[in-house]
Structure formats: C-alpha cells, structure tokens
Image 1 (cartoon, rainbow, N blue to C red):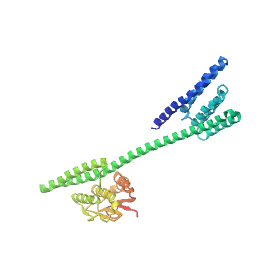
Image 2: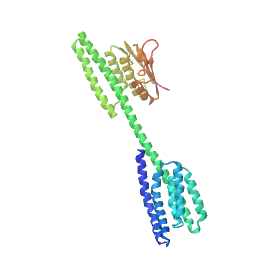
Image 3: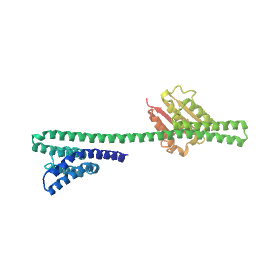
Image 4: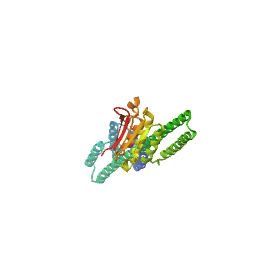
Length: 361
C-alpha cells in the first residue's frame, strides 16, 4: 500500500511539474534572439533543457535517497539556476526554490533556500524586489504542500492499519465464538451419544434412548444455528439459558449439578460475559475432570465460580486449563477484559478444579 501511495504522489508531481516547466519556454525561445555565437546559444539552451528536466525528474529520484544526495542535488540545482540567471532572468530561481523546498528534508531546505535568498537580496536591484517576495512565497507554499502530502500518507497508512486490525479483531471474535459454540455443543453431544450407547448396551428401555438421541439431534441443530449466528455476529448469550443447558449436559454425564436457581443477583452488564465463563467452566469439567461426580456453580453480583470434585490430572497443569494459555481460557480472558474482570483457574488443594471470574470493584 505504501508503494501505491508513493506512485500516486510521484505521478502527481510529474504532472504538475511538467505544467510549470512549460513556463520556461519563453526563456528558451529568448536564447535564439540574443545575437550570441552559436556555441553560446547552444550552451544556454542545453542548460535550460537540463534545468527543466531536472525540475521534473529530481524530486522523484531523490525522495528515497540519502540526505547527502538530496542536499547535494539541491545545492547543485540552485547553482545551475545561478549560472542560468545572467543569460535568462533572475526569475529562473523560482524553480530552484520550489525544488529545494520539495526535495531537501528537514530544516536543511531553510539553509539552502535561505542562503540563496540572502545572496539574491544583496545582489538584486530594486527592479527585482518583487521577486524576493515571490521566492519566499514559493518556498513556503511548496514546503506546506510537502507537509500536507506527508500527513496524507500517514493518514492513509493509519487507515490501512486500522482496517487490518479490524479484520484481525473480527477473525478473533469469530474464532472465540466458534470455539465456545463447537467446544460446548460437541462436548455435550458426545456425552449424550455416549449415554445413549451405554443405555443400549445395558438394555435400557428404548424410549429413554430415543429421548437422549432426540436431545443429540436438537443440540446438533442448535449448534448449526449458533454457528450461523456467530458468523453474522447476531448471536446472543443468556446466563439463565446457559445454566439450564449446563445442568442438562452434566446430568447426561452423570454429574450432580449444584446450581443457583436464578441469576438475578448478577448485574445485567456482566451476565453475558459470565455466561461464556460458565460455558467454558462446565465444558472443561466434562472434558478434563476424570471421575467428577459433582459440579458447583456459585454466583454473586460481580463474580462467578465453577468447582468440580474430579481428578484434573496432568491437564490441570496444561496451558489449556491454567492461566488462560489455551484457546478456551485465553479467548475467555479476552472477553472478560472487556468488563475489567479477572480470571483464575487451577486445581483445588484437596481435589477438583476451580474456575473463578471476578470483576474488580
């Protein structure tokens, strides 16, 4: 994108400089009527042609060069203007002042143009005092245009960076949402499918097995609907609904769910984030806590806690469960950062695992 911006700027300079270089034509034509020797006329014409070509090409060639080249070429171009002024007119310095203001970086252009301005002010007669005003105006105007171009380039780069960050943020959101949807839904589907299989193997009544399979079908459809809503950004999460779904998933896994009866104690601003925390906590219980028989969920106005009594095993020390290092807890940490909440996850001293979310007062 930077190269595209530079190409646009270069084309704009070549177009505008070519237009202003046309004003050198009267000086060029004047050389043929000066009554000088042919070699002198040829030298003057050649100098003006080089002067005009340099005015068009030098800024494009020097914008990416070192300070030495930019300063050296600016001084050389100012010297060429001084050499041409006796055979043309002192007005030839207008192009030199403009070029130095465009190509010489920093305050060095003030040194170059300023030194030339002082020399001209001392050398020119009263007939050319108006030229000094023009030279000063041209230098300031051209430098202002360069500053405006630099600011515009910076704004374009910032705009592109903001767009790239927005894309990355949206990708992160979709990744987090898909993890929440698929991780929880597929875990619940796996648990219910396993329960149905065990029922069939133990000869349980067919109607109970069918009930579990209907739940599997319902959860699969719900997961598809959640994925569609996630991609479109329309998915909403309810803490109360998550409590109901989590209790059903734990029941299917044979884990006793000790849950609060209502979510009224939780401040409304935190309920959606706590719903994601509850989903992640219960999903981890189902996936990682071997032998868990009980899962407790406790709610406060600014906190939520999920505990289980299973054996976390080696997974308790893995990044996927502790310190928010895995996809689940890291994504949850990012969500909770939006409400200023702190996430704690780790094994309990005796048995089990705890996930706690708390918003700082």
